[in-house]
Structure formats: structure tokens, C-alpha cells
Image (cartoon, rainbow, N blue to C red):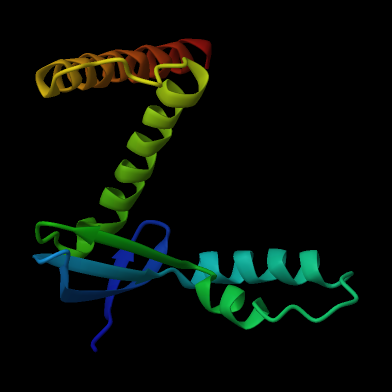
Amino acid sequence: MVFVLVFRQSGGLFVLQKRAELFGREVFAYVVLDPERKGREMKRLILQTVDEVSVREDLGYAFLRCGVMVLVSSFEVSREDVVSTYYLRQRAEMLFGFAKDDVGFLPLWVHREESLRGFLLLQFLSLIVFAHLKKAWVMSTQ
């Protein structure tokens, strides 16, 4: 295993790329270690657990996870683009979570796969419009 140091504006990151098989398909797994984020998350974890009287068995694992991001992709991503891809995926999940939880799109009452695909396309397009409107509103209020 070889971690490659990638420099970004926010600092250096260590990125490991590994080919793997997932559900019978070849995928690319990327493990990213952000030392600055690791420090912040470890400090927060220590402050949260300092008042706990009992010993947490999962504390060692929690410390290992600090500052680590994992992205699994069906296509190869350059190591320089892994973090931006991770945050893009996270943002898309947040937007779909908004549509699912806050707007009440679920449950879906469809009878055919074509109807489901059409509904998801419309939902995706509306989320794109929503994201652009939100961005324009935030820029106009600054």
C-alpha cells in the first residue's frame, strides 16, 4: 500500500488508491487521510468523552476513523480530484436527502420502471434548479 501526498489549498492530504471487487464488479476505492481534519476530529472526540465515566470499547476505532474519508467509484479518479469528488457526492446525497425527507417525495407510487426513471429525472433536475437558486440567493445577500 502506497499513500500519495496530494497538496491542496487547505494543506496536504494522503490518498491511497486500491482496486477492489464489489458485488462482482471492479471498483476503485480511495482512502483519504486529512491530518488537519484528523486533529480537529480527535480533539472533539476527546472533549466529548472526557466526562464519560465508563470505558468505551469503540473509542479506539473512533480515533482511527478521525480525519479519514472513503470514496468507492466504478471509474478511476485522479488522486488530485478524489476529495472534490467526495464532497460533490456528499452534497448530492444531501440534496436528495432534502427531497426525500423534507419534501415528502417518498413513498413512490409507481407501477413501471419507466415511471420511476422519469420521476427520478424530474427530481434530479428540480434539485439542480434548487441548488442554483440557493447559490444565487446566497450570493445576492452577501
